Each structure stands twice: as structure tokens, then as C-alpha cells.
Image (cartoon, rainbow, N blue to C red):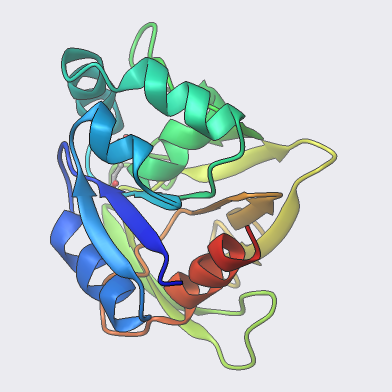
Length: 198
Ligand code: GLN
């Protein structure tokens, strides 16, 4: 059976994720309504602006359904702002910033500093043989992980060396960087495999 994987399509880089998922051989659909959310086997939460996405999720009556489905075991993959959305705790968030939650991590929003708006680095990612060319755009990093969280990737060099930028916990995955940029679909494939294991 072909799996259906949704991309939360309230804001952010939706199209690139849809394309990457489709090239992994799944049906990829944009999710804007609760009925669409109910129809997917997995969900990507894209990069963009986490505060805006949460506000829109509330307006579109998606925030509670998102929380419930993730709590019930829906496989989900958050990138950048999407990582913030999946995190249980946020440092340097907007006042009262809410999340969907599920991942037992603390993320620091805009962690790399204003002067380092974006940068790129070749990263080792657990489970992949060759490095991934990772693009970071006003990215968060993972400040702290709970006991059930596996680290998938860390920054290799520079002032942020050692910072955690990729995690997995059961049915949830998140990266600080943007795997949808650049045509390398191996990280999306990891998520598709996680969805197929169900
Ligand atoms: N800084 C953004 C936020 O806080 C995330 C940036 C991104 O997704 N590229 O939501």
C-alpha cells in the first residue's frame, strides 16, 4: 500500500517537501484542514516561522488535532521551525510561545545568533554513510534531550561545534537544517522508512 504523507501547509517551504516526499515514492499532500490531517500516515512540519505557524494552526482549528494525532503516535518530522513546533520546551521563544510538542527536547530558537543568519555544513547523520550538505537558516539547536531521545546529528566545526541539530524519538524526527533544499532525499527517505515501519 502506498503511504500518504502530509506536509503542514500553513506557511513555509511546503512545496520543496512535497517534491522530496513524492520522489521517495509516497503520496504527498498539503495539510491545511483537520480532515486532511486525519487522512495522512505521517506528517512533515516544514521550516518557516514557528510563531506564525502556531497562530495559523489555531485559526485553522488544527492545533488541538495536531497535538492529539502526534500524541496518538502519528509519525512526524519537523525541520527548523517544524523542530520548534514538535519540541516540548522552547528557549528564546516569543512570550508565551506554544508548540504542538511530543519530542522530549528543549530547543533554543534562533540559536546560532543574528549575525549567523544562515550557514551550510557537511554533517554526519547517524544511519547514513556519506555526509549530508546541511543548510541552516535562522535555525534552532537542541539545547537538551530527554532520556528517550536519540541524537542523529551534531554541528562538526566552528563556534557551535557539538550542538545537536538532528534527533529521533520513537515516531518523531526533527532537524535544525533544511533537508528539502538541494535535492538530497536521504533524510526524507529515513522519515518515509519510519512511517512504513508504522
Ligand atoms: N527562526 C524561525 C522560527 O523561530 C525558524 C527558521 C526556519 O524555519 N528557517 O520559527
